[in-house]
Length: 332
Image (cartoon, rainbow, N blue to C red; front, side):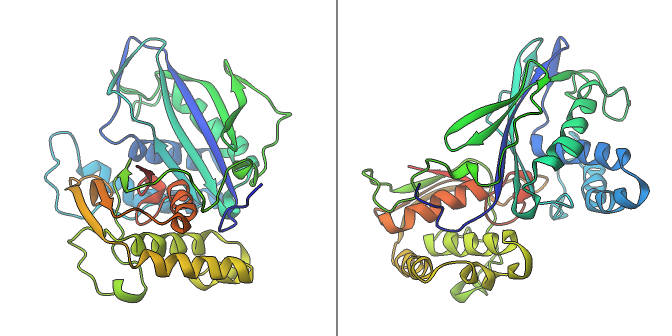
């Protein structure tokens, strides 16, 4: 197996919720409610001392969410920087807005770094999802809302490109214990792709303002960040927050790499700086939602040496609001 260009612990869960009412309507950006509802349920299930960090983490989101209703989206306050007290990404798959009885809603949960612990999923997150499905609390259970109107139908765990079943028809397989390295099994992080790639299609909004290095330290936050160099810098910054122990810093990324891996990263960064963005079709994201920009970018042919790092960046998510699924793309 060709290892990931930057070794990161990661657990990926593909989750399918089955609607059990006549009609539900999804919110405009599902991960916001996923974070708020599941985070609130988790905090309510924990002892007071353990619940404290969870309540502190979701309070800014709860306060912001209370201000922004379907009738009040003309807000000027920036979307708050929110995350759970563990490193998690909530990624909603492209969905329609309304679902009927028996239809499935898919989304992905990623646990990263020191939080890539299957025990956390079993003890905290899965029970919270089950409660959210039958929640009688009127705070969440309302007509045509998702909460209280679904059941956890299936959960799969990524092993390379294969999704291994963990929950099927509501039944949990306690014998299966996924590891935080199996996500990379069989993946080809090699700079020898037979395809030529020219651009990025952002699947979720992104905001790369404030990546603290080099030419980007003082760039205009009101303009989209479009160079491949900035994207790789954002990956290094992201990975620096995910490496374990004393290496939790941007410099820590290079510390955990071999000499050859450090050289490969440096060469990729240098080559990325030479690639021009030829065309971009980016739109501003509404202020009441996370992220800043969405759309596509086209470059001169992207060098093969950069592709493994772009593939890793798309898996880890980069920039701001990664907890809410922002900052991922596909190559095209």
